[in-house]
Image (cartoon, rainbow, N blue to C red; front, side, top):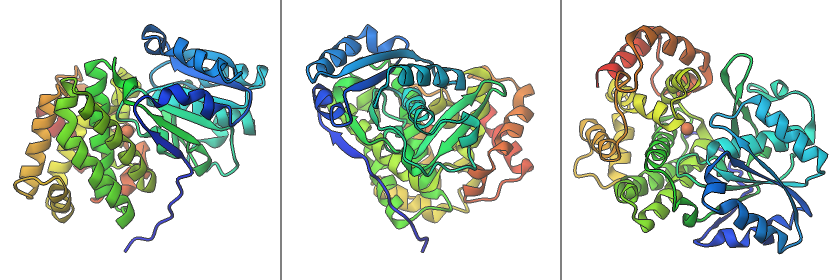
Length: 378
Ligand SMILES: [Fe+2]
């Protein structure tokens, strides 16, 4: 049995309408806060003004940083750090998808502990406390509201790098289905696919534990049952996807991700393909390639999902069908990635040895080549 440490210091508030309580939560940490959002979504749909009003009701002075881009860069983080420090903020509210929440974690880290971002990239581990982050997800796939990770793009190298450590876990995760009301369908699909990846990668991971299995199985059960209805707009199903995303985030916190995520990183950093989609395009090929070695684990997942059959073929086909129903693009060619990119994808994946080391099957270059070939021809 794999041993484990369980540390989740996050106050999870999972409640429709919980956003209206943001002033109450933020005021626990001080009088000045930095509200971080992406460039358009929060303001366009009135969330920014709403949050500012709620915070002012609690006499909080709020400074705004509305410049977080998808796959946030070091440069953006440093700009936000200046904003945080110049205004003597004490807490960060991150309202957005994984990019906003990850950027907020990095800002809380650098603002508190100083130094260069490079000082904290993995394999270094953050151990000292950082400023508190309140994470409010507006997508259902990142899980970042409950993870000890922040992924930041290094501008100089264009490489995604991970900052890791327990202090990065947000102090409050505020999950309110009302924040998914305006989620674009494509964003919903791509982030939901990330939830599936997190749950499955955690479960088949060599670092899986009995406790992480609980979260992964519960996550994939709800994701599988709800993703299509949520895609069609059903609010109750969307709420269940938000729940599944949180659980998958907790699961991945135990184990980290595997070859699936490692293979996806090139597509995001080079071609800007959304993270969840970049991982999803490799999920089924990786499972297909490894299925004989992990059939026992797939059986357990399929059983948790109450599938009619529990063999790997049925499981993979069932996932394939769900991805199809929510419009997930399935082949690299359909994503516009030509055969000439194959070696680049593999070379980049090999840089993420920590993910590959987690994989249930040891993958050499020849194995990765076969998997990528499968991802081209699906
Ligand atoms: Fe992910």
